[in-house]
Length: 477
Ligand SMILES: *Cc1c(COP(=O)(O)O)cnc(C)c1O
Picture (tube, helix red, strand yellow):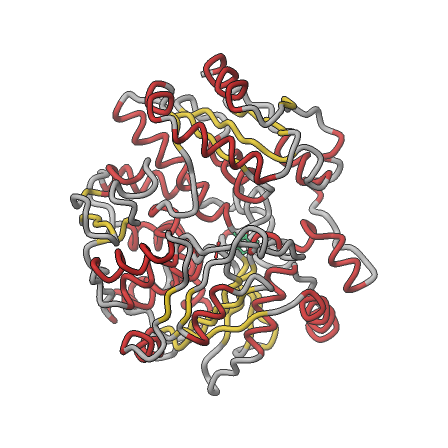
């Protein structure tokens, strides 16, 4: 299997050669040359597999430059009940992504947030950590990951890379802008290879520093600086697995179909669902849910993709979906336009020039239905109401991101016999304030995380000064 760029101007490469990088050299995103097809016989054989074995069956179709026994070992090491131990009471952590029925046979939560940071980024990031270490070891190389975070991604990366001898993580976060719980989650990691840098400024200031450092090609090469951004192909690949797992958990035979509702930001999660469907998984619909930052909902309703400015991007109660443009969306458009890289190049020339593109009235827009997508959005009040209804009706507390997906799922009822699986992307305890606003009470914290605010913290406070950050990196690499 080789990987090509959505812009058609980069050589096709095997998996390990695109693993550590970000964008393709021509500015596009990597995708497999073709989507491997899954036969009915394979689906039958996969139905009873454990999560790690299912992951092996799926990833084997995409990765042919890691020895099978090594890939198997990496997956066994990654998807364990210990790492994904925060299942809802009564659900089995050995399932890794347990299915929690709200209305048996009709509506369920697929728990994707049982990993160490209680958000779905752990599903892919834990594997990425093990894959990175494996490939670096093979090549005798080391890597220094530099990133900026306002919460979820940065801590998922740190938990995935901690203790790995060939990797160091330098994570910039906005000083005083994260909750005490988020700070404790990140800064209490005292591993030698984890460097928390709190920037006296906003998230954007931290991100600007990262961009400035990454744009210095000489510095980047000399200090082997890399990233773990949301466009990394291996992250998408890892996420395909739980669509299959959720399907098997919700159905008895492969003649059945299911729908998924996905709280979406950068289009990474639902892109994996799209690929699972292209592989032949019987998915009736992919329901894309956004918050007030509705650039994707607008596209699926109107055919117009209009990335927003930073000023237009709102801070919401589902902050992990607060995006101005959806960085993985180009992957879907590549498929939508029949994998014509010239069309993608032309559309993204418009996007990068700061304007929108409009596919309404084109055959491409007509074919959206063939890809199974529908969409919707929620506002803060609607998420609060959904959290309340879910609690009253089903006795579960859900976080505001999952509430967004549940709200939009209700707007897209499925035919009898097609269960709707709502992807639960974070645990409610991470958003205790919003839960309190909705329910007048806060979720119980898992015992293992009690009092983490009192643990010793390791963090350096620095100004958003590019030269100073470079000096810090040079001194610690
Ligand atoms: C990242 C994230 C999302 C959005 O996922 P995308 O892959 O960016 O679409 C939704 N919910 C939570 C809790 C997240 O952390």
